[in-house]
Amino acid sequence: QQPVQSPQAVILREGEDAVINCSSSKALYSVHWYRQKHGEAPVFLMILLKGGEQKGHDKISASFNEKKQQSSLYLTASQLSYSGTYFCGTEDSNYQLIWGAGTKLIIKP
Amino acid sequence: ETGVTQTPRHLVMGMTNKKSLKCEQHLGHNAMYWYKQSAKKPLELMFVYNFKEQTENNSVPSRFSPECPNSSHLFLHLHTLQPEDSALYLCASSQPTGVRTEAFFGQGTRLTVV
Image (cartoon, rainbow over the protein chains, first blue to last red):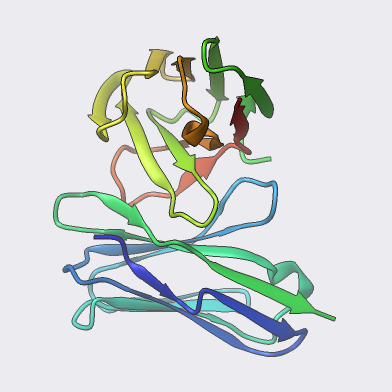
């Protein structure tokens, strides 16, 4: 079952904050976050493992709540370079990694 | 540059043609993957190779045929494709094998079937 990402798209002004959610109907063992810019390869951001992890990377952080079967990606004081499509991938008990449809983030100056 | 190189970057082929996509990595990874990315759809895993052995075929039609001659190279052979096969085909690699590790993606081959 594909994880559901929300919102599908968001437009921000530079410096504003954003939250991207990823939720699944199945029990999760890990959540992966990637960003893909137009015409480029998806680039790894972080992996969160079962156990209620939180991770941070510059001004991008994420949390994983395995009880709620969801993860959230937080972008603080967004920069123009944050523009792109953000994908979450969720791992289930069968070690299958299934990807969400993506959230398109547009940052305007 | 992610260390994963795909060629060609763009490919237009007729439905009766035979072509191949190539993926190369020199990161020392032992797992390689083919994904299909269509517009407004999630990434679809097609094939997984671990140590040159195919460990997963995600119900992919036989008109797509993967080949992994060594752990650095991965091919996707295409024949008698359909217009709905037009998409971005992404190759990725990871080390060690398994889903809980970072995957490195190539820039993809944009395939158009006419």
